[in-house]
Length: 372
Image (tube, rainbow, N blue to C red; front, side, top):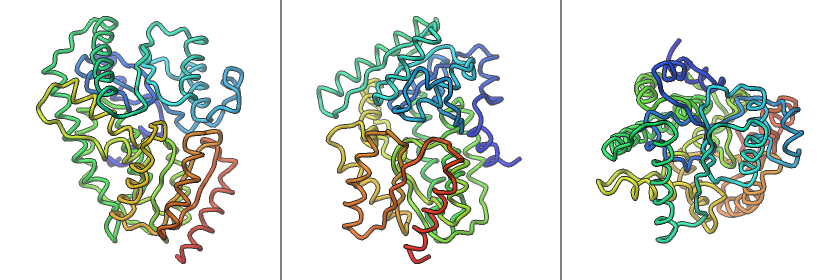
């Protein structure tokens, strides 16, 4: 099995051999759900952050008795897996202040599972001097909480070492992603997104080693149209494969299970580690619609990535009842089309293969609209 296939396998399951090895060696694992979480602090204390995801699970029958069906289906899918003990490898949760749907999900995790450890990591909605100062204090508090809960010491030198490793990873990821930008792409979009999903499921040192191997690999790609994917978090590898099978090659994306999770991150400048992490993560979080007043940043990010990847059109997707991206996608479609960029807005349910026929038909029609 080549490394790209390894990444795809990791991305479509929850537990993996590297995670098992981490646990056997005495490491702890915490679940989180938002890219605002600073993994450098956790890994410096031998605590592995594992990003919660539905892993393609469409069944929410149990979760629906806790969260109404008016909640995002990604959250309900994750809650279903947690209620069915699929996340028993976790030693606790970091409740990162993301969207309201995730906050409700963590409420139900606390109510139904009563985990031994759940820390509320507060994240501002604005980026300014005051919020950066507050977020820095949250970073330092997180360090103290992890030290106390898992009986570890997190030294600043260890945090800086992890920061430098993340810088190496981000630089390499940009090179890896640009393998799709050329006129002859060497990767599928499903491969690129599988890499990011795996990144959030592996120790960083292991991920970096695998990423360097994946840099040497390439695929023979056949496609009709080059498309950028934007909108809400999307880890549905199988759905992305189906989109590409009908000819829409995802050559770039701005989602937080894609380039949005790392592309705009600041490189370490040698200053105070916690002040730097506050700035790095809060400024990067502007890719998310939960950040007030940052619409222009997100629009320009889409335009910049679309230009660099030379796309034919943009797909703005969101899950049903995702208020943040559902509203923003409507405005973004109008603004992009005013600038001559064709757009398809796609509302869906998470991992619903019953909806696949409709989605494929809409994408095929969009490709024809693009004249491809």
